[in-house]
Amino acid sequence: MEIVKTVHAMRGVAPALAASSLEARNQALDNIAEGLKNHAQAIFSANRADCSNAQAVGIAPTILHRLKYDEKRLQESLDQLEELKGLEDPIGRLEMERKLDNDLVLRRVSCPIGVLGVIFEARPDALIQIGSLCLKSGNVAILKGGSEAKRTNEALFEIVHDAYVSAGLPELSLSLAQTHAEIDELLACDKDVDLLIPRGSNAFVRYIMDHTKIPVMGHAEGVCHIYVHKDADPKRAISIVVDSKTQYPAVCNAAETLLIDRAVAPELLPKIAQALAQRGARLRGTQEVVHLLKRTPDIPAVELMGDNEFHTEYGDLVMSCKIVENIEEAVQHINRWSSHHTDAIVTEDECAAQFFMRFVDSADVYHNCSTRFADGFRYGFGAEVGIATGKLQARGPVGLEGLESYKYLLEGNGNIVASYASGKRHFHFKDIKPLY
Image (tube, rainbow, N blue to C red; front, side, top):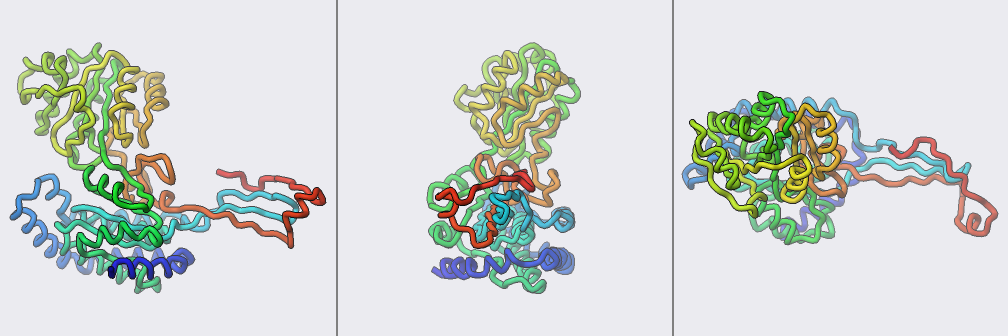
């Protein structure tokens, strides 16, 4: 039960991190960047060992790709740290100020959530993202990475943890869980952990959600859609569909379903299928799609799929496809089968685009751009701890703002409720700074 003791101790230091200066937290970010550069070869060596072991046990190529931490991933980490450092302090932001009476002033200010448990699978770069975001947002965090990346995670955690301590922040601001058994121990810490953020497969996230009383923020699936409207520019549509599916097919913001209007499908769908095939991707589709594409050259055979299979997250170079009558059917299909992560329309009709963006109920809704933009770094958040598809606390890519809560501060002058209840005094509500 060591994890239980650790988490309880972390709750004790959470107020100190929340009250730390922006200068100290930014210094720790600089320390992380410096540590990554100084220990790059040791990190790469640890990662090569993790990747070698993963290959030996036959790990899926898509997971192996996420597992790698090389020069490119290191530079991405450094870029994220620099971006994050430049962002304003999210703690203590005045969101609302209101006079309840002449000598009674209410303020709403942002504050860290508190103690976070972040559990992620084979993505060692996620440790840097999460550790730095928790640092800047003033949240203490216990991290648990996938066993496939054990050596890399340990090397990265040591750098991040040392960076915290060197900046004068509490040593227990960050902790690393080591074993799978500790996950279940962490899930039972509902008295001390304020929020769990899982990152990984559908089955993994669902397991977390089903085995804890702690609030969970995140998404279980990334079933994202691209809808090609009848007034789409053909070249733009092809480019967006190909990027959304093939640029990085293993991640949650890769498109999994292609919808296309019947009016343009005979001419445009074969071109899209050929462009996807050139990048190694294939389609699964309804009977209408199979029939339309059966004579299209240079594409793999289109596999017939049932109407109940559209809620499928492939995480691979495979894409579901359906021909729809109009935008209303497309929106209805998306709201029925999407995981409410990221869905996009390709069209030159501004009215159609606005209809789509109003009526699609997803965290990220796009017009004429790839679903792959659903990312905290690409949104200018510095990085993200994950994508949230729920509607409470945070939604979409969760950066600094999503890791803040708020509290109300009320300053008076000996005021008591009895005076107002009796009518001797009266409220005089006046906004000094309105909410948002």
